[in-house]
Image (cartoon, rainbow, N blue to C red; front, top):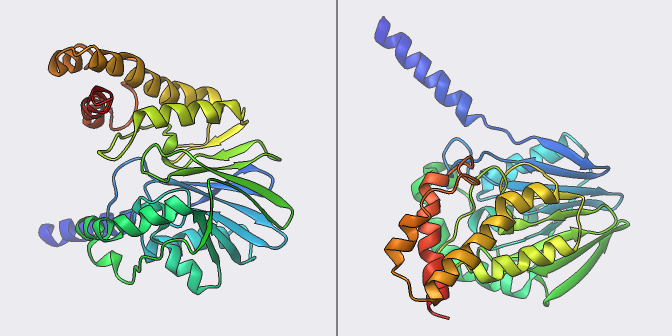
Length: 304
């Protein structure tokens, strides 16, 4: 009997986790964010461990990023329907990592136009197979039905888009992945940063990331003076919080680790010296990512 009760409890616990449903939260009038979990991709979150968003216009909905799978895309669509019954007309991709675009096909089949800058779409196509293989290990059967569809409506380095009275500017950041971009809503003072900004959790420097470009892009973001920053991961914040949790970290990696690399200091000594940074210790994934981030930053600046 006890074993049966334990089994039922475990099943109920799993089902509760598996029923993760994203919820929209208002940023300003007609602009919403969907803030996913801070942890890693999992069966429980269907790869929605990121922050997404949408804009409601009289002509339809503009979705910022489409999730990492068909199921994830369906869940984003459900969150939108709780706010409006208007259809998703545009999907704007800010990047090429799985959670930014592998839900494109779901929305395209509903009639949405999928939009990105040219290098964003090219990087999506380049990494599609690799990202699907990784997600198969993380999501298993819940990846079923996911079909990679790189953006089909392409723009050059800087695009200004208008739909239903809303104006968006789309520009490259090239920080986390080549071709990454941000979306600026100048009328609202809102920026959807894509994977340039991380709030509440530590940003990740990947083998194909660029700390130098990330730092430059963050400074360009700050120059826009947004009132509301919708990060790639974490809660909606203001520019000051984004500066503390992402901008300052880029500055540390470039000014401290990059300087040491250029001066040919021993890498291991440098990484050990800066292994504990109290200013960032509170961030989710700090212990898992900080040393690896320094390692990759050192390597990047060492080669310059």
